[in-house]
Length: 603
Image (tube, rainbow, N blue to C red):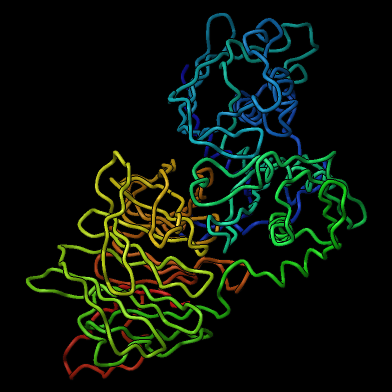
């Protein structure tokens, strides 16, 4: 008897609830970062502890789902929880590890096949996609294991003398030699957290994704966050940020009660500017936690800080206005009009607003930074760049032409330095400046030509599509140039990826194929993916998103894309028709109007 069961789908049903009623093709987005982790025994719509071994009764499918959740929670008890599912005679097969050595192998479940054996045991074969390794410090590192299948057996606990199969439950025989955790369990029993490190030039805070077990009570949350900061950034982010000074240590545990938190650090180089930056770093790393923070450096107290006030006074991102939508219409940039949204003026003067294929335009202090792909000779393309107060009347044009150039993106600065950006031309990543100079950026990628690049709102992280695969990398802006750290490949269910943009500080919007063209939201570590559109109908060759952030709150789901020569916007999904384009003359009678193309946001 072989019975396949798609556990991933079943797990998602359990996680989202049976009353969700959201079709797969709707504009679904996972909510942004939540509040503080709740106390043990409760949760933000979640339970803090995974089910016990007997909770599934004699159901093979439920038992396997629960077994692949058992490792979830605080690391020091992970082996104990998993071994409770393993038959006593087989528990020695799983060798305990302690402290920082505890690591969970996170997998995306594809299929499970159950085979009933003659000795009344059941062989389970699960097909998986390796996602990463969840470490004790809350980071999800790239996958180490390469297995696409795991096999083990189940037997009834009634063989140990229990009264009946339902109350006795099941046991695992021949267990895998790693602690497996399903992607669904990761979402169910952990709270995604962003902690922040200063950029390499100390001008910007850069988020770093971590996972905190929901079982950790709130009074310990501050302690966990401070330990993460002391331990330093994730490996892939390290080239673009700086950690706390070497040999920084937490003196005792961070403590708190009644909205008052105390952190005591042994930290070198503790000048007042460094302490001030650390206070801002702590305030944002503690998310939405309210109350007051007293920071001590070697037992010397600093002035008590109101966390909400600190966050309000030190914004994360240099934006203050809502985004405006634009498109390219008949070779010129034009505003888009949608009810309830601000529609702005074109930031280019009419004499230079022509021959445009696509554009990336950003606000920087009181200036506009505009980078356009413009039509060259014989169907080729070149880059044109302008900067200054709007409307920009002069453009610098690149000296080289290419067969194809992607939508250019600006690396947002926290100061008035000259603008720098990134663009892909003929499969190679380039940086560009305000003079339209283009300079190759080396990337150590084995997977083929680069086809798309997108920059996070912090200006220190990029996402790349190369060889149909998805990558993230840190940016270092020291010395006036742009260098990219070693890219980290993200695992996703999509294949043949074509383009990408940042939808939030910890989420990407990507286009590829899920059997047919589709658009997904993928977390910055690849752990969580959510279908946004599964019925696109044609390959997406252009995608742009406004990254939801805590500086300018806007409704989620703000992205636009183009497929098969037709542009669309999300939330609600609708085709961008010519009547949405402002400041254009109607076509002559009997002439069909052109389609708007290459939509983008200005912010």
